Image (tube, rainbow, N blue to C red):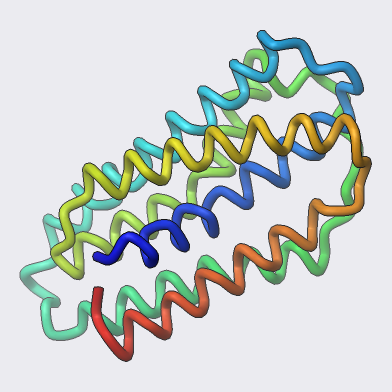
Length: 184
């Protein structure tokens, strides 16, 4: 897998974390360094772990469906990208009531923002791409985008949230077509 494709995937996946971080920054108003670390660390950790889990699951079945790997990867990436675009169009940007950097809220947001990475890991397994380095890049990019999103959220308000999610979804769809036309 080329680094440009990997970075595109990481940025596309990180947009969910970024969008949630922007909303969290708006809801919190004042973001402490501890809150920024907690949210960034957990989002990055989950974004790192989900492709690994998806890859492990995909590796179990990849040999059985090898001839269709490109189409499956195309379908999964398109589905994830399409879901992100759809959610950006129907986003209501409601304010968060609880501190999203603590407890059950933190875990639920971490899982919710990283489910897409599970599908990407599954796609990588179907394409027989090693997963450790891509997972690391995805996790680091998500952590960085989360930190940036928190800072922008507390400063910029609600201008970027759903638009950035749409851009991320479109990037994943473009990468899906690239995989179909020229496998990773």
